[in-house]
Image 1 (cartoon, helix red, strand yellow):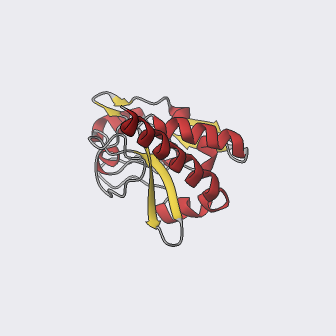
Image 2 (cartoon, helix red, strand yellow):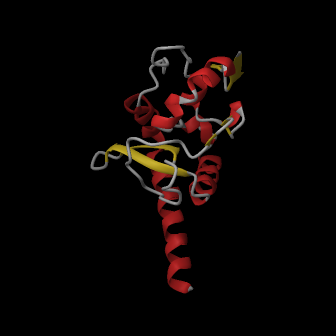
Length: 161
């Protein structure tokens, strides 16, 4: 099934995903794009990023911290509540025995664009970590502000208990 979200066509084929059992989702959570959090509206992005990161189910990952090459993705199961996490492998927190708990439109863009295949690697259609990092560059200040604000909130709670 193809669906248009934010002008982009997404691909969902539940039959193929059910056959493979979500191998992609079991190996690495798909990167989210700024559009997934309301870009280009910077205030909306901040609000949605803050709420998502505070939930403990989303995290900030990176390719190169010194160059601020960051992106957002769902956390790896078992590591919920890590605002910054660089685990490259692991099962997506949203994967359930019956598939993704997120509705199709609420999944990260890279997950919506993933073309499922039988007996071969699914096609990410160019949605690599490097590609997604480039998409985040104009909004890196919003991303870092939301993430550090969540960390400050978490630290206040921990120290004030």
